Length: 139
Length: 382
Image (cartoon, rainbow over all chains, first blue to last red; front, side, top):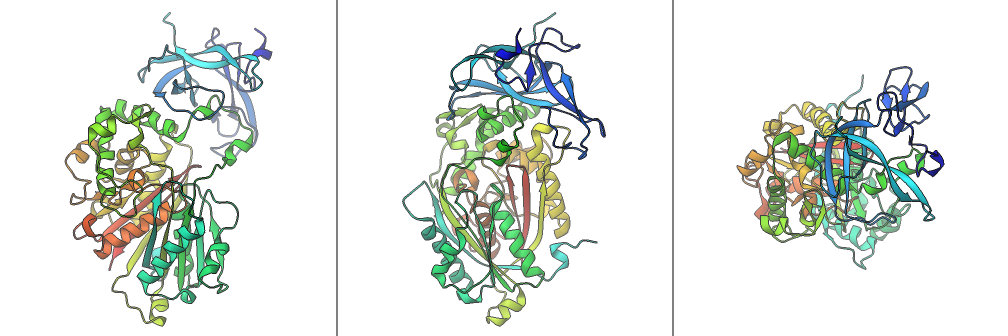
């Protein structure tokens, strides 16, 4: 897949990680000073120790749902309620807050989740793919 | 070695005043603020020229609203500083006024919070660090996620968490300065407009405007004005902290509250059991249950049973949000933390009328603000 179609190519890639090769990976970072793993990648400085030796790290698109909520009211442009938000603890450490695709049903905390790309539009209305978390397919 | 507020000379709250918190109106902010300041001066029995410095808390008003308002009291030339610290702006302003008086740089200082609803951006968005979907996470969604996690962790139901709103709307119905002044049943609250997760509109703080003012003073300042300590309330502790990296990153508000409240309680040399009244940042119902546990008012996971037992009612073991809290009293942002100090002062003076927590001697005010920052103050009757 061409990453040029992604809505936020600085945050994720279509290609998976070694741990989850079939799932889009998240583009995080790691602090060489203290080992703190974070998302997304940034170069300002480590939030935990202040170190500036920060390196990109591809994070696996798999994790565990911590919480979810159906949102019924949203004022921002380009997104219509209702939709479902969730907090997912990635297997690689960071916690991300993300859109959940689960057919309108609110999933329960503890559920295994994985990344997927879903159709979206950019600010100009052009077709793009954006990241969602969905229930992890059972092996 | 650093010192605490308690190591310096005593600081007292000697005057409180409000303009009612209300929905957006045509009233200029100057009217809102002057109403609160004049009420606080009258409450203290102090003339405006006796005030040495002013701290103006706001998060939404444009640059430098202070002198444009305060000059109408007479332009005495006092130093004015504006404090913006998100929801905790008023709490931060109060802390720094107390520190100035405690340090002896001023004898009498005014803290006033004024705001009107206006669209402002968040500086964090200018850092150019992307997010998957932060545009979709309004504050109510952030706390709806916490509510889902709290329910999952403790077994609390949607109805249990909504009981916070029943209590706080009941308290607000007795407060003439509250934005919402109507008692609500559990059915009314649960049947309201759906917002996010378990929240309906009456479980969320309203958007509004208003003003609150308090005057803090030293004993020397009061002596010079011929005023005694009869109605004074001592500021026993002041703590301010900001978010660190926590193991459970989603619960940073509670972790930060636990840390900041612990510092303040230690400084005041009291335990959570000694608190008679607490005003906390209950912008959303789940915050109250999270924070009473974080502060140590009850063990983890016990907030709902204690709430059901009436422990946090006015007349219970510790009245939580007797003003109505952010849910009913309102949260005009700049004024909110100042208003908490006003409510606790009235409680500790025994002047809270139908909202009075009988025999209240110690009170705690708590605010968190996006960032995140947290402030906790402890006040004590003399």
